[in-house]
Image (cartoon, rainbow, N blue to C red; front, side):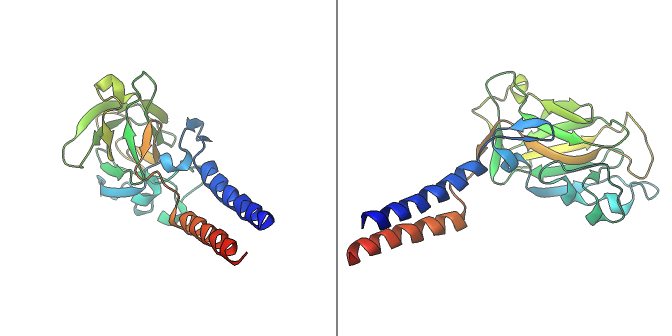
Length: 222
């Protein structure tokens, strides 16, 4: 019984270990995210591009390309599926949602929110955050490329949690035309974040339950 139990316990530890590894900090896009890939926006709430004269082109209007980790590597786009970013158009906007994690302040001057904007033109973007995607709070603007924001400096410490980020291209600056006119958003990530559901995934939970049942069953038979 001791030998069988030790084997099952080892399996249990391996399963728990595999889950804990997924929660470790990861360097992504040159920035250290404490929660790894879970830190990035998961869903598009709304997308309102400003299209003028056919620009930006349709292949650059895949809103889902702003989700997940930053993955632009300088590639050319032939279709929306080929692109790893979305162009907002001059004055256009996109609202992204954090589903499995929530943005919060850090109670310090550390940067809490990162915007990954790509392309040859560095384009300014206004940034707003919200609890419900109805009432919006401004946290200033970013100047393009990879830029971070300290939301504590706007009065939002760790007692605040936000699900939504709205990015709006600053139409008063930068180019006003071009196939990818407007800010080109690759990803949005929360450095300071709390997990919405801080439990193992269903598949891991199921394996843990099976392991425990096997352990109990073998004890009864032996």
